Image 1: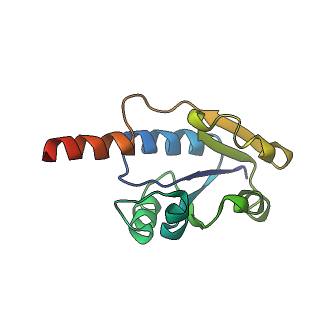
Image 2: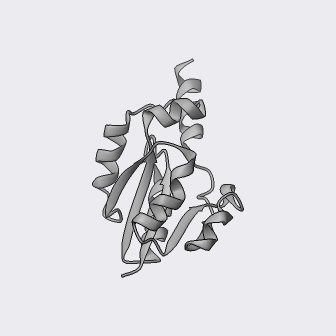
Length: 131
């Protein structure tokens, strides 16, 4: 069985999220998605619209996702890859090169992001419409 892993906040799930999940799942038999906990988002200076448990619940319902785990700190990626016997690590191309250190443990692939959509764009659009 080929196992794939990806990471993200996955706040306000949108078409771009589904695209990366679908493409990641196409690379293997099992997809693990690791999502930033609320506490980790606070460390990163980010605030999610939806709390961790809601984001986890939604991702667990996506047909491409086989497992959802919390991300609590930057350093856990190597342990996640090793402990879950991951073959492929997938991230959006905006992170290109940032996770090459994982190449000692698995294949690392950076996928193109879906153009014209992001959680930041959705939040900005909502804010502009509200004003």
